[in-house]
Image (cartoon, rainbow, N blue to C red; front, side):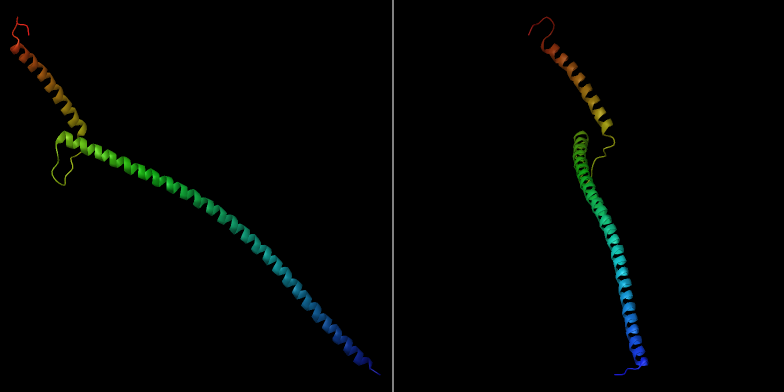
Amino acid sequence: MGLAMSDIANVIAGYVAELEDKRLALRLQTEAAEHSEQECQRLSGLLKEEQESTSRQFSLLQSLRIELREARHQLDEGDQLRTRLSTLLTGTANALKGPPPDLVWHDWSDLPAVAAKTVEALAAAQAQAKELGKVVDMLQHPEGQSP
């Protein structure tokens, strides 16, 4: 049985080299695992930040949708009011000035002045009618005659 000392030394050196290789491989695996864990923690942090950002953006989007709905509602109310006022002003202008020619609208800017002149003319006509009524009454019932 005689193994020589050099053979034993070679076997031991082989085992030592094999153990060193295994130790190196184990160290590399440990470093890789630590790196993977750090990378997972980093990615987990980024994911959490992204979720928080997405949540804030979703809340902002919901708020903007509500504001947009309210703005559209106000716009619709404004359009309805503008339509009613346009109809009112057009009717007033046509009543005071007479029907306009085809495909033409009366100017609305002078409506207060036209209305004031119309009221003055009406008051003058009423006063004149009152005076004429007195004249007619006097003609129908001369003085001293009772009706």
